[in-house]
Length: 407
Ligand SMILES: [Fe+2]
View 1 (cartoon, rainbow, N blue to C red):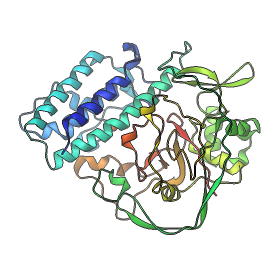
View 2 (view 1 turned 90 degrees about the vertical axis):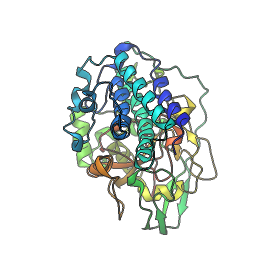
View 3 (view 1 turned 90 degrees about the horizontal axis):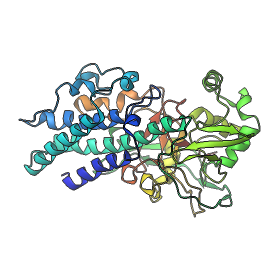
View 4 (view 1 turned 60 degrees about the vertical axis):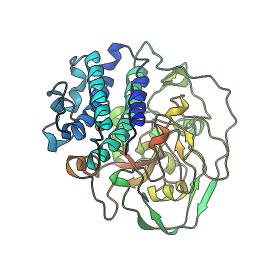
């Protein structure tokens, strides 16, 4: 049973994130991968309308044309509009999109009050809330592409200044390996791609105690990491050359020094922070430079399943990763930055997709992407768990993606 207070709290949190935006900011699409805020607000609403309300007898859509317009990628619902053109439409207006949200929220509230949401509809409603949280993170990462590229350097949200901290030494935690159970256990919500729980055999391995820092990564940049092809996978080297990568996304040189653009504006690098906005290829090259490798997702989960899912999330408010503190085991497993793993994104043995059109949610992307674990400073805390599998193509850099080493 979904409690309507939870529904409204999560929906309102999405709108709260948008408060710093001017109306013009809602409409721009910076690249095919990133969507305009206005589209995120409409599409998350469309999800509830399509998978819940449209199946309740008597529901009347605000505008039936939105059904085709805000479909992201569900081919079984009809051909979705091209993704790269989401930023080429001024209509519906931002106000109209907020009206759409209010219309759907009010209709859902009525349905919940009348007890009309049960069984499959309740499951779709719950999925819709987790979907909404995924788009909260995307609103931030997509707005970051817009703000950080702007010559006027707008600030999305200021961040309290803090004193630099001495670096926490990197330590290694060993694991004996063996036969382990991996994947989501129990009846609580999980995406289909986290199931079923199954056994894996791991060789003995070690996991780094914390994320790679900006200072450590800067040393890699300054040691010529971006000009030594022997460190790079072939596809990564080709992309580096094609896009002219010299450093992580949002790093830029000013007066001979590296600076970075953040949601709180621009400034010099802070060496104690975790590095972020690196691709899988950069994470992999960095690991090779240090004679290490990236963890497999099962290795990461073996440690994370024993850890508290605490960390620095969206709820912390910084919208930027924080320096590590020392701990008795690996720290920063949850929050701060997503961690690239060495695991290609694929189905677990016995994988069963969600039913109907929702089967398109995760399963059809199980090719040419890498798994990321642990959530970031833009992920709502409630959204993450040890079994959670995020996935992006290996060249993606605009998410809060960082590096943890293994060996
Ligand atoms: Fe979506």
